[in-house]
Each structure stands twice: as C-alpha cells, then as structure tokens.
Image (cartoon, rainbow, N blue to C red; front, top):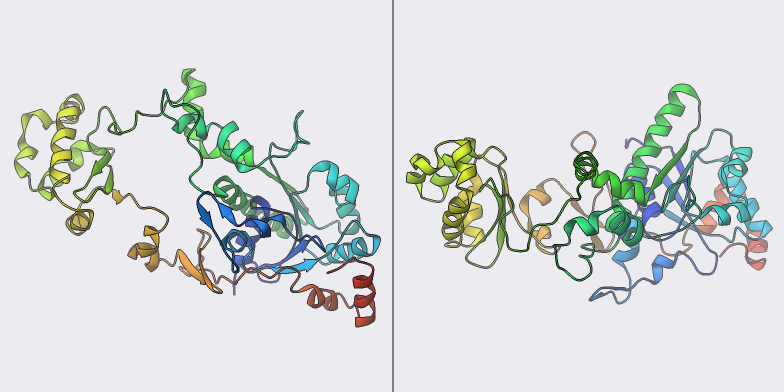
Length: 401
C-alpha cells in the first residue's frame, strides 16, 4: 500500500509548478482529480516547443511530467452549475490544491474561507510566485522570473563580463523543485491533521523555493556582505584543491572530482591515474602544500585524464575512494546503470519519465500516464452520485466537458 492511498487531492491549477506537486502526491498513492477548464483545459497542454525541441502529437512529455497518475475533470467553475460540482468535490476531498492568483480565487469563490465553509477539515494548499504576504503577493510569475532570476541563481552562475545571464537548464526546472516542496508541505499538514484534527493552510512560492535552493550561498553573502561570483568558464573549480573541479577526457567528455579532503584522497587518485610517484612528491605532502600547489597539481591531472576516454576512466575509477561523477546530458542519463538500478526513470504509459526522488521501503513509485483532457469527467461525476440525466444537463449548460 502506498503511503497516501485513500487521500483525495482536488487540484485547481495550471502549468508546471502546482500540478507537479499533484504529480508527486499521485506517485505516493493519492487520488488526484485535476480540474481543467471545460473548454480550454490546462494551457500546458498546448506547450509543444521547448527551446529547440518540439513535440509532435501525443503523448506530450510537457504535459505528462507534471500530470501523470491523475484523473481529469473538465469543469467550468465560473458557471453556477460547475461551481456546485466543485463544491461537492470539496466536501469529499482532503486537500484543495491551487495555483490561482488571489483575485481569481476571490472571484471564483475558491479562497480559503470559501473552501473551509464547505469543508472545515480540508487542507488548503496554494502555490504562488512571490509568497502570500507583502506588496507583491497578488502578482503572478513563472520559474524563470521568481525562482531563477529573482532568487539569485541566474546571477550566481553567470560568469563575469557575460552580457545577460545564463538561463535555466530546461523547462519547469524551478517549477518541479518547488512542486516537490509543496507536496512535502501538504504531507506534513496531513500528518498534523491526523495528530491534532487541525487543518492547515500550506504556502510554497517559487521565490521561497529558489532562495532555499540557494540557501547556503545566500547565507554566506548576508554574513560576508558580498555576492557569490561564478568562476570564469574553463577555470578549475577550486583555487586551493586540485581534487575539486572538472577534467576533460580524451573523447571530449568531462568528469567531476569533488574530494573536499584532498590530502586524504591524493595518494589514491595518483594510483588510479598511474602516477603513484606523485603520492610521495614533496609538493603535495600535506593538505597545506596541496593547497599551495593546486595549479601544478591541476596541470598534472589535466594531462593524465586527457589521455583516456570517459568510458575508460569510468572503469578505472570504479574503485576510486573519493566522490566523482561523469558530466552527463539529459539524454545520457537514460543509459546510466546506477539510475536504472534505482528506477529513477520509469515507464509511464507510452513514455519514460523521471520518478519523484522519494522512495518508501526501497520501492520505486508506480507511474501512470497523464489523463487525456477531461477523460474522467463522467467517472468523477458518477462517483458524486449524479445520474446521466443530470450529467447531460451539465453538459448542455457548458458546465462540464
């Protein structure tokens, strides 16, 4: 039994951030009913072009990633008949999950007080761009604006003298991280309600999640009163540690060494690159000397590592004591044996998708496909006790798809 089986999530949300929280909760076993506009659906369904990558036809990973395992209900909550259906679902749900802005929530009568009037025990969870308080609480935003730019990631990874900024590595980068945070908050609120009977309002913002992701550097900056500055491209990662940085292999790939105690691992690295004499080199006899002679050590390592391919180093470094990793792109990760062994990428209908990173009892989640638009409308309505005459009347009124 998955940990959230028997929990119903009513999701009134669009795009990537808040729906990705619903996807995590569905992975964990919750019944997630995705409410989509009766005619237009979630605008994310129309997203086909992402940078240079374009999806033709279905399934569409731009939709599947944040919506796998849910049921879709096409519902116009602006119509009185549609609002009646939503109200009945609220009464039968454990969590109301929304990304709608405050003005829209007030207009549609789905704000906290409206929902709590129908179900005092429901957990009200909302994802926002900039947080629930302050002068900009009513404003919207996306992961590019609130998570990436405003929360300091963009400036912190953009090297000096670059015109503009380095962009996020892919679509929904901040959305997915923030959605996982929101799913965790919802789960904690369910636990609190189980213990105390009290229902919480859960808030997660893209801005807050972006700051949390940058928390270590932000803390240093606030303490030292100076911003973090990205290294110049091509430079070694650490000015005082040759075992913390990137090295190019013979086939133009890169591997990353991250050994924060270089004196502990220096001799082992020397043996693995077939330069055992360097372990006794007086230039690298202590941690202090390694730090002082980092530039020379980096030169030696660059020359040695450039002599073999990444595949050869992967085989040789299998017994290396210190942490290291190949630098992989979003296609290469699908061939990574360790990723496959842990089932971090799994089938979801016709696609393979990344599972959420939490596993229970050393078991990967089961991923279902995302629903087609409004595919479970009649199913959900019949669960509410509506007969076909009532369902047809709702369709004729334009309240349901």
